[in-house]
Image 1 (cartoon, rainbow, N blue to C red):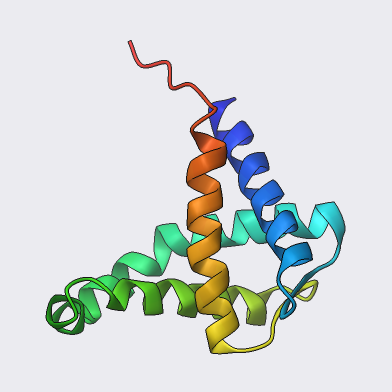
Image 2: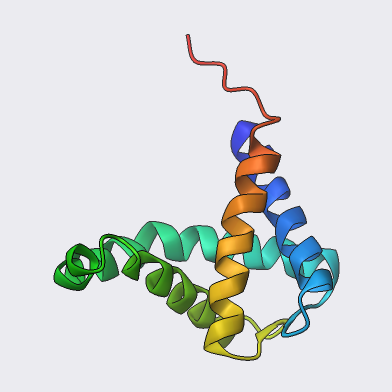
Length: 115
């Protein structure tokens, strides 16, 4: 149940940011849910591989290269999903930063029941 709530909050964050940012488009609520699912899968499967492959660049930039990896994941989701569009790399970078901030704010309202 907690996973479903987090997924819906991520979809809400995607939908809100798509309406705020000019270069990001998403086709409705269902499209935002699909984007949230695909981003979760890409972050689970692709992101660890990219982090390991770009570890020297991440160390040299003191972790700032992880922002570039997040933007690449957003652009990959753009290529995979028909109802989701990002106009440029810089828009994807801004979208990923704002998405991370908005997700953390929204998910702070969800209580973790770990006993």
